[in-house]
Length: 243
Image (cartoon, rainbow, N blue to C red; front, side, top):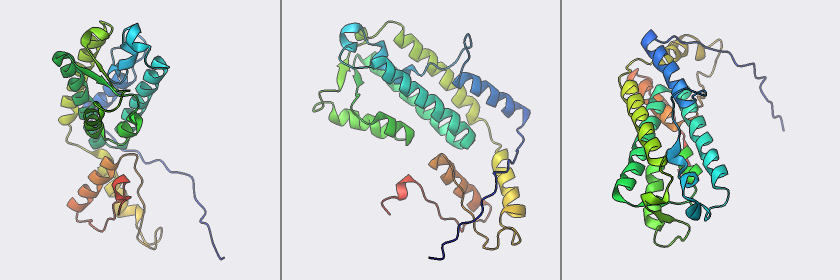
């Protein structure tokens, strides 16, 4: 059928420098997201609530510890990937993590904590839809028997202090990243775009496809390109499925 497949070359690394202060922040963040034994770092306990239930409550959930560990691994991987996707996407993810942790702390203060194991939590978390997840929990709590309404006394006494410690760390990270104004990754990308990527001898069509792990990165990138008067951009992400 005259189908021809292009010969794909090996990926070529393109390095971009960071200002010393941002490089230090980047290193501190990596240690915070994936702490080594003995280091202070995030526990991700916001996503491990069922592991900290007292035995009589915990028995309602099969493989509670395994599920909790899985969610922790997902969140750690997600944040590490977002950090390398773009500082913008990472900052947004950290703010959501901070706010969701505060939401759990507030539930303790209010005396009611909801747990919803049958909702597609992983899908919502990976797709930046935590606000929607909370709405689903509130909408289904009266009809879904798997959603448990707990009291603070139903949790191990170490759980709430660990949430508060995580909240402090997340507040600090969100504040520090909120002060970062440089984007050397975009600067290098823009330079390569203008000098290499769409040069006629290398790219006769003048077209290119950019993939990103996060839709927040692609939307951010489209906006930045528009600021540089590069507006012939077709943006496609998970929200484009219905189009």
